[in-house]
Image 1 (cartoon, rainbow, N blue to C red):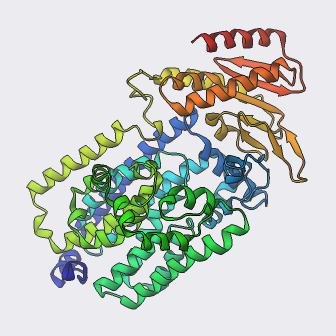
Image 2 (image 1 turned 120 degrees about the vertical axis):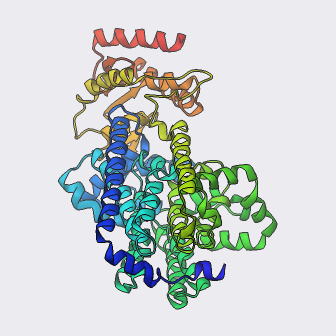
Image 3 (image 1 turned 120 degrees about the horizontal axis):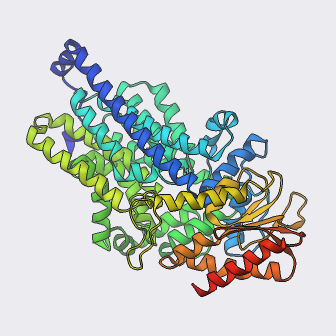
Length: 553
């Protein structure tokens, strides 16, 4: 591993070449901007289509409500987080309107983007922000690659980033805090290359502020700096800082708000290493140390899923990170945290968690190419093109986050496919309904309507109807709105939709039968009910007709 990891910056010959060929460098930069522009426009178009056709879901609304509450001085409060907390999910407690999200995820970096949200307080703002940050991460990667590689090779690295499965897959998802990782992690590495230590530590702190466990990326960088002997004392300081931050935040700060980190995350993801329902981070680590056989089993088996996951990271880079010792060290720690988890979702390559692995993979590829520039032959470039195309094909065929449901079926057996025109036709009916919902009323609605209705204080998900206000008084929501057509359509193939449909429909039927809520609007399987109001006779007839159709289908 020695010299391959401990390489100095490019030699004098390469520096001279760059100096006498400035036009070539400008050409590479223009190509990087072109790739960034293509990525931004295409991915943003897909994300906006996903939002306006009502395919975004719970977390998009949760984070929008979080930003909206921050904007009004109710720092990090969210009723949607409360409904998704261990108190509600496990203990059956009624959600509260002023639940503090920091108990689940310590996302203090959100304050950086609050001025932007203040200018455009809308859920779409967060989607644009996510695409912009991921795009900027690719440009930061180009600048990082240019510290060691030629402009041509740096453009290839950048193109690989914009075609990587975890990059595209996580960007066309709901807004998540992970979209900040590429920009700040690559920024940390760029400052390292330039030995600009002020910016290095600023970027490192920004990485820590993304979310409580993201410090594991910095820990990997620190171990690399120690092993490579490039900056061992800096590496040691980075390891101590990142480890101490994660332990302090998860064990001291977050429990002050709720027990979600312990009970909802650590206990659910690492139950194989602890014998308590409320483990701490240190207890999980100790459990791994004291159960080495079990740890090895989770790290390597089932081996086919691990290989497929790694291949998903490697393919856009033509599998070069598999040969890079630096990539294994830096990306190894986020991979360790992912592989050691119980459950299946962690190994889904297009979920947001995969973004934590991206910086190590790409920086490791940069270091490998610095040592092997002679391998960048026309024959290898042809192979690399094939790999990039394969990455795009695998990403597209996986239909991450149902972003491409307007083109490919969500399910083949049974067939579940909603064409683009049908999606937008249904979206028009949804908009006809929700535009009649006042901004100051409390709402309970189905998952895919939450983002568009989340710019408000009181909102929860059906079939829950009760919520505690600031005075700790239990109240029932004013409006109940459900997209029953969407749930019924997807319940034919998906268990979550089937469960939601079977739980929601009886509740709505009971509300009407007991005259608790009146049916005010029914369009294309979308129903709106208002508490304490009598049903519109014509609309009530439409509701009864809809019930017959849904039950007989």
